[in-house]
Image 1 (tube, helix red, strand yellow):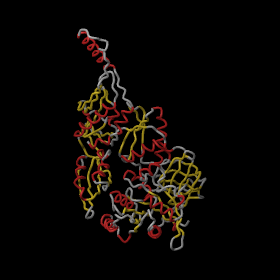
Image 2 (image 1 turned 180 degrees about the vertical axis):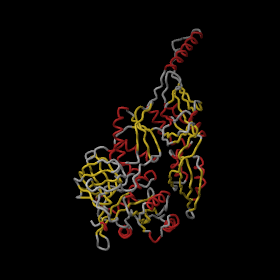
Image 3 (image 1 turned 90 degrees about the vertical axis):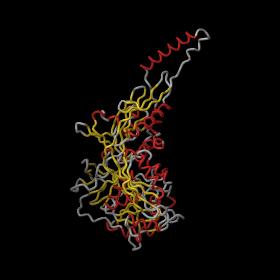
Image 4 (image 1 turned 180 degrees about the horizontal axis):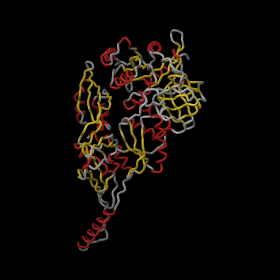
Length: 605
């Protein structure tokens, strides 16, 4: 098709503002898929996890054919994007492949924190934005409020907004016309050299690596030899095609179009999202801009419950990394948990999704350690070390200072919750930097918070205190020095590395006591007494005791002198003391799972 008749666009929005439902209506209106073929709502959310949680995790491309009011047929390439802050990298890659974006607002909620972040991301990519106010059929819809917020917060004129009900299909024809009229076609290429941006990829068990691309110049066909810029790897193309929304083979992919390439690549690690694909015969001079290695924010150890599954876990992670470029991992060992992997994630939801996908899609029985962030540890000799695992923290006598990562969070909520939000920020060692009134009823609070403090329950507690109306978005804001210490958990005098964590000195006692109590409840009794201690730098700050199992040695004494009973009890006492010196405590796997999985209660104490 002529490049002037191609429109590439994404749908961006806050979580649960209806972008996946809107995508369904666009597919139906363009007859890409008939209503009877719609096997479930949010058709592009293909994963079970996406349907269960009601969120988009992966970007999904689809090609639609649309005959506009001018009688011309247009090719519309939609790339559906996630809404959560943890998947901002997915959104960024999708926007790099487009010329426009449909911004969806919930008519009952208006502009939210992630709405602002996604609009700023789209503007950085120089995209044309079409604002859409969704859910206008609901009784609580307030179009005037949404238009006011668009003008005041995002500087988008209310005349450009389109009222839509994705559930009932109201306003969909007007939206399709606006996409054709307002979003510019792809630029005509200046060269015939092939250049395609990899914005996603998956691993197919039968066909190997499948690369999702947007062609910027030239063309690629089946049988051509392609080259990946980042690795220099060359391969023959086995198939090219488009999404309708299923994969459908095509003759070629030309400039401006979106589709997929199946090269002769079997290793998942060879394809990188953000890379440039070119033709070996007609190569482009330089890669397309925008490729960068993503830096994870949160780290956690993932181990198989059965150590025999370690190799299977590594292979599963390699396939998962191909589908999610923001997920990184490397092998590590733990004295308590055996062989496993140290994994990096963009946030806590990202970590939950990866763990759940490993369990469901790859049938892995896994356990995850307490999440941590990257600390900058400055030694007294002037050296600086990056520490993402508490086990590798140097001796306190050699440390000059420890710096932890800080984020700049934007919290948006109704004005009457401002006091509760400020208390939550202060409880998490944060500082409120700025407060800005959005309109008569809403406020945006900008706060600096330690990254470690928002990992476990910050978002849940924000939703709780604002009755579900609060939303947040955050971005990295450098590092700051704090009084941080390593908290060790000792069982029978032996430190257990799986429970080690880096905490602020003010929280060391409460966290140490909490972990000690939990362990005391789940470690089974032994024939000798077990001490469970929380220690900071060799000093014990909390202790719990697992009582010993006691055999009744007096059962055979029927009456008689009391000295005989005392003698038996003293003999038992001596035996228990010797047993404790040589006894080893085997911590059951259930204990690790119980302690590491129940961290949500910590913040509510």
